[in-house]
Each structure stands twice: as structure tokens, then as C-alpha cells.
Amino acid sequence: MFGYVIANREIMTEEQIERYRAYYCGLCRTLKRRHGAAARFTLNYDMTFLVLLLSSMCEPEEESGSARCAAHPLSENPWRASAFTDYAADMNVALAYLNFMDDWRDERRVMRRAEAAALSGAYSRVKEDYPARCGFIEERLEELAGIESSGETDPDAGARCFGRLMGEVFDYGLDSTWGPRIRRFGEELGEFIYIMDAVVDLPEDTAHSRYNPLAKFAEGKSEEELYALLTVLIGEASEQFELLPLVRDVDIMRNILYSGVWLRYNIEMEK
Image 1 (cartoon, rainbow, N blue to C red):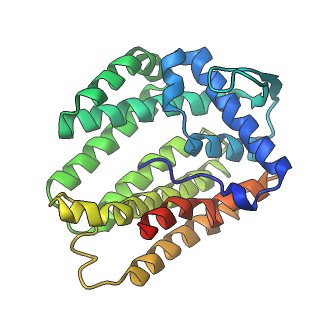
Image 2: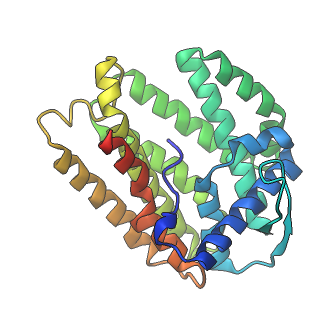
Image 3: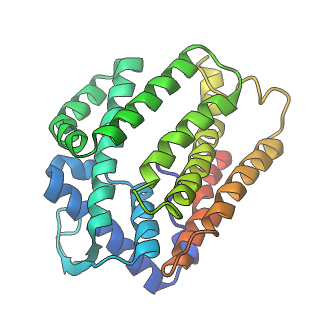
């Protein structure tokens, strides 16, 4: 369910692209520093968005520089990082590890078991630092597995569960004024991601008789009606986003929420 919260680079300026990539590269470097080279393979733009969001709200002290890496050995690329990058790297590892284990339990995919094994030590360290948070995420994933294994036909059940998981990840632990608001935004965004993933997977899941939370709900509904549902959900998330006290990179984050989240959907619909 990850890989939707990305920017649409076709409508970004060169300056915006460079800044966006700097946070992405900073997260990649931090994953390697904190959790080893294997953790870099779990890197995704979803957690880059979280770094942008928390950094915009709190304006932390940042380190920056430029460096070569295995992915870009011929040229140096700029990077930026802060304490929020450390947090996002830890959550990136936790979500990746638990997702790999979930896939292993559900489908017995050997590769997923191997990927989880490569991250098991890193996840143990993250859980030591965030026992309550990791425990909450594990509970929500177990709850979600129960919802899906029961064949639940109400898509709201799974969406709310995954929304609560994302709300926990986004709630870094800010003060009593802004903590609940960023959690609410994370919850709304999580619900959108869950339903978006279900819409994208619906044709293949139907063809292979696999569970999909939208299977019953989508009967007799057109693509336009499902698109309208997604529009409402991302609109609710965006409404919460606009209430946050953001001071920088707002244009990049709006690009993601108003355009980038539709990129994968558009590709799948074209197929």
C-alpha cells in the first residue's frame, strides 16, 4: 500500500525537484547510517513526504551536503537531513519489515521472508526505541489482517484501520495543539491510500478471485464513480493538510497531494 505519495515532477521547477531529491537522498543516507546498507532498498517517497511535512512544521536544524552513492556513482547529489529524517528512517524500516512479514504469512512468498530476515535486526532496534508505537502498528496490521481474512465487504472497516496506523506514524509527538491535527491528517491520508490501493488492484483481484475490500461495494459502479470516491477522500485529507502551520516546501507537498498521488492510478487506468 505504499508508493502513492509521490511528486509529479512534470509540473515542478528545477529548484523544487532539487530540494525534493535532497530530502530523498538524505533519507537514503540515514537509512544506511542507522540500519545498514540493506535498509536502503526499502526507501520510498512516502516517508520523504513525512520528512517534508515535519520539517515544514517545526523547522529543525538540518545538515546538508553532497555525495556520490552506489545509485549515482558518477556525480555528487545534494542531501538534507535532520532529527525528523532519523525518525522517518526508523518508521520506514518498521513498515517495510512488517509488510514483508505480512506478505510472508499471507502468501508464503520466500523472497518476502528473506527480505524480512535482512531487516529483523534493524526492526528490533527500532522497536526498542519506539515500543508503544511499533506495538500499535503491529496491532493495527493484525486487525487489518483479521478484517480482510473475514471477507469484510464494508471498505470503511479496513480504511479506518489503516488510517489509524498512518495517523500513528505521522504523529511524531508534537504538542497538544498540533499533534492531534497532524495525526488526523495522517489518518485521512491513510484512508485514501487504502481505498486507492483497492481501486488499483480491483481488476486483477477480481480476475484471480482474491479478496478486495471494494469487491462488493464496486458492483454496478462505473470507473467515474470510484474516481469520485477517491476525490472525496483525498479532498478530506487535503483539507486537514491546509490547517497545519506549514512554513516551507508547501508547494512541493501540494504538488504531491493534488497531483502526485494520482500518478500510479492514471498509469493503471491507462492499462
